[in-house]
Length: 355
Image (tube, rainbow, N blue to C red):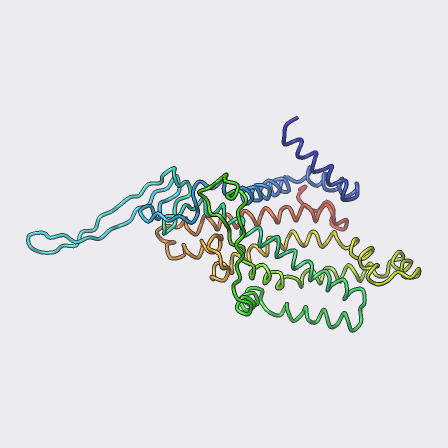
């Protein structure tokens, strides 16, 4: 049996132990029918592996500068520029325009930026920042939002009005504007996380630590909790009147027990689907904050796009390469989210990627 087959079997066997057999059947059915879901899974798995093993996959240290090799084009492209110089001719100074063509080199397959840093290595390391912010920010948003939504939907009345009106106030502000304001309020806190592969001596020439933008993670979580609150509230409203909840209440079960054992487990499906979509949205928000200079780390796709905006006319790849990485990652995550939605939501089962 091929290693890939073993991994697939391990995945499904582990999934069966954690969820119902019906859910596993739906997931497998939708995956067999949907080519887009398979593409999304491949893209997401590839991005995750790239982020995990960045020191092994990056051909160069992403922070090293080589000014004599700056703005080299990617493989398959060349760069033509005009250099102006002056020289003495017959006792007078004349301006000479010379056309210079710079060719790509296999040493830098995706070219270099304005400081001679390898774009491929920077894109590989940038995946770490985007995925970590996306995952950790979603965890914060889900924790806050689900708690608020379940409490609001379960208790109703004035509690519901107070909590959901606060959510409406949050929705009144554009996400990016609110995020910028919160970053300004909290400041830019960056956590230096040691790289285990470098500490073990596997890749000694790579950065010993990578910067985790703590403030950005907190901010994107606080900005996006509202969507989880609205979904969780809707689920709590529909579940709170079910017979098994009334039975639990009749035998003396407390509100905390009912929320933990009955409301929350039966609300997981839409929350899980929303979480998948929110990871992609948070990656876009983090890239926007990095583009504006609020991230606190230079190894970020948004930061590289910002660095290349002044060179779009002459060195388009500096901004384009990380931009393509963002597009591929977001599309892959959204395709996985569509697969989960079609498989886990009975109301729209069969509407997805099987067509």
